[in-house]
Every structure is written in structure tokens, then in C-alpha cells.
Length: 316
Ligand SMILES: NC(=O)c1ccc[n+]([C@@H]2O[C@H](COP(=O)([O-])OP(=O)(O)OC[C@H]3O[C@@H](n4cnc5c(N)ncnc54)[C@H](OP(=O)(O)O)[C@@H]3O)[C@@H](O)[C@H]2O)c1
Image (cartoon, rainbow, N blue to C red):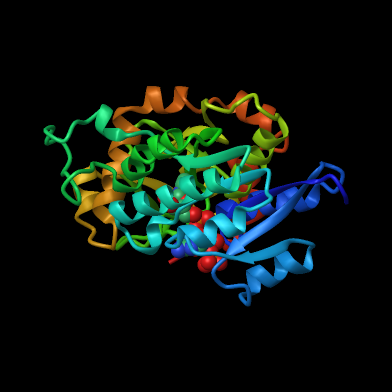
């Protein structure tokens, strides 16, 4: 439709950007249209978006010029980096800089930068309660994103700093679902003590981001945070038990034990949960549920998410 504003979405073929992509596509009368950015226009996810009406454009986060070209003529840009593809804070920071400068070059009027808190404001590098990682971070995938906030400011891009949180999909894809112990019983192993974990359905992040774009200039220059629900692991395990019809316990471990599990990124994820646990209050306060609902009225609770996704949770 003529007059529609283009929103260019990095990560559109993935979980987080995909939620936004589908929210834009679903709102035919919303006044926005989707430009999905990918390195792989022939992938199934890119083809699905194209078939649903998206303009699919090729660009690479490692290549600022390709991003500036992909952003040209767009009103908005959703800026996402994927730490888990390379596990490098430095690389994530460089990619964020490419996004910020490309957004400026293209004259983007509203960028949303998918970011996190800088955990070093809570736990300075000199604090040994958790290890320093890659020489200068505590939670690498948080701190690198937070450090990059300034790159958007310095580039002069009208930006909303969008604090996301733990996807409940981590129970499906990140090995954080119930696992059978030596006693034959299922347990969810987290270093969360009795603190509440701010969790969200990843699709709801995209829907909330769409809500931010729809609110126009209101959140430009602001930091806003979202979540679906704040729940203890005891509460989460009880919900999972009910949804799956099996007994699932919370197996509480210390962050140090979690870090020692040795899977790629275990140290970073262990530090992250330690932050979630020890800084539960400021982390939660930055992510009010009611506010999230105002951006995305369809926001799911954990129980609703489980009802829709329980068959996707692997039981190992
Ligand atoms: N897991 C969680 O609980 C959680 C919570 C909050 C935030 N996050 C953050 O979310 C990010 C990951 O997003 P996701 O979960 O949506 O990942 P995902 O489902 O694996 O998708 C990754 C997306 O990033 C795109 N991408 C990656 N590298 C690219 C590059 N060099 N150039 C262009 N596009 C590139 C991919 O596009 P193509 O492959 O099509 O090119 C794909 O669309 C991470 O930075 C993570 O820290 C995760």
C-alpha cells in the first residue's frame, strides 16, 4: 500500500526479529511494511517471509555498507546482533557499530536496539564473585550490547534502547528444559536460588517491539524493558509439571557449578543467572509486565506459553 513506512528488521529470519516480522505482516492496516534482512535469502525462513509478503533484502552485520543499502528508504530499523553465533563480545560490539552507522547513513527515523544492562555497573571487573570473561566483561552478551548503546547515541540515530530478557524458548532450544537425573526423575537445573526469573515468549518480544514502533516518537532516546512474567524456578517447575503431566523439580545449583558444566558459553550463562539472581530487584523493576502489556496486549503468561509449546519441549 502506498504511504506505508518500511521497517527494516535484522534477525527477521530468527526468533526475536521473526516475532517482529510476523507482527508487521499480520497488521495489514497498520501503516508499516516489512523489509526482512538476511544473509541467506534462499533459506526456508526467508522464503516463508517472502511468501507472506515481505521484501527480503540481503545484508551482513559484518558489512556496514550492505546494511546502509538494506536500510535505505526505511523509516524504522530493528537492530539485533546474534552473540551466540560467534560468542565474541568484541565482534558483537563491532556489528552493533555497523548497525548504528548504517542507520545514520540511511537516515533511519526510529531504530530499536535490542540490548541489555551493563552488568559491570553491579559487579565491577575487580569483583571476584564471578569470573571476568574475555578480559573485560562479566556477562559478555549483556555487556557488549550495553557498551554499544553509546554507538547509537554517538552516531546520532533516534534510538529506543530495548531491554529484552530470557526467552522461555530456552527450555526448547538451549538445553534449559527438564532433564532426567540419575534417580529417573525430571528436574530443571538453574542457579537462580529463590529469585524470580524475568521470562517471555520470544514471539512477544517482537510484538512489543512492534508496539514501540506504533507509538511513534514516544520512546526515542529512552530505555525500556519488557517481560512476560517474573517467576521463581519453583513456580516454573510446577507449571511445567502441570503442563507436561510429569513431576519436574527445580534442581538448584550454584552459579559456580553451573559455569563448570562446560558447554559453550556456560561461563557466560552462569554469570548471567548470577546477575538475574543477585540483582533480581533492579532487573525486574526495569521490566514491568503491565507496561509490556501496553505495548503488546496479547502478551502470554508462562502457563499460556506452555499450553501452546509443551509438545516442543524435549524430555531427555
Ligand atoms: N536466548 C535468550 O533467552 C535471549 C534473550 C534475549 C536476548 N537474546 C539475544 O538474542 C540474540 C539472538 O537472536 P535470536 O534468538 O533471534 O537468534 P536466532 O533465532 O538464532 O536468529 C539469529 C538471526 O540473526 C541473523 N544474523 C546473525 N548473524 C548475522 C549476520 N552476520 N548478518 C546478518 N544477519 C545475521 C540471522 O539471519 P540469517 O542467518 O538469515 O542471515 C538470524 O535471523 C543474541 O544476541 C542473544 O543475546 C537471547
